[in-house]
Length: 334
Image 1: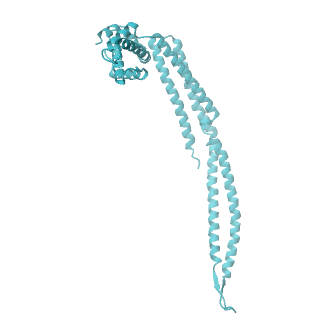
Image 2: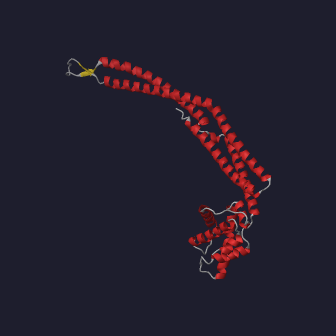
Image 3: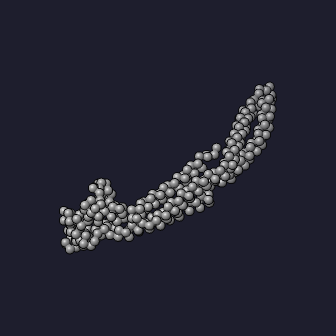
């Protein structure tokens, strides 16, 4: 019988893929929208983000509707294939039954022709001859077997024709799954292009964020921070070289931090009036891990890098607290 669950499984997989794509798109669009809201950016990018989201959602709806339409179009063929499956089973059963009848008769014939009968003693003594009745019965069975072979040949030919019809129909239903249908291919191409457009728009938002917060530290901040951190980490390099190294490392870490810390939080660094009381250790750990992954300081061990970045991030956290700012936080560094 036709495994109709295959088409249903493919349809579910396609739907799941489409929904996953739109979910990922919505997530990045929401993140970008949040950035823009915090920055007070104009409504232009907001509207573009909303349009991009609506385009993707519309395409996903088209995907779902097309799956339903294609499935409905194929339903008559599916039903025909199921009917052919039943015909195949019936033809196979008839062929098997005929083959079994032929074998049984041939086995009986083989036994009949070996049956012997006693005869009178002749000039050369007594001897046995085939039993006439058995031979007659064998002759009848042989004629029946010949007829059955003719019927079996027709049955096999019928089975072959049915199987050929099944193969031809299966190519349309089974061998050409839903995702290979040109209409589905076109829709997924469209969905991928829309998703890329949203990704590009999200990148544009990040550029707006980076332009808004091009830097956290001034050159003097970097020099002072490097001087403070050098007290806790010894690279074995001359002080002048180490100072340059630490200052450059602060600058590299700054690039990652600008992209990783929400703009609204970055704005707190230079604002004594606003801020929060404390930040969770998880927030610090997450930022430390991200910076440590993206920034490499060749002359430091992994442990030294972790200490360096953790102290730098804790400095920023202190600068974001109420009543504090970056200059005060640097001055208070031990």
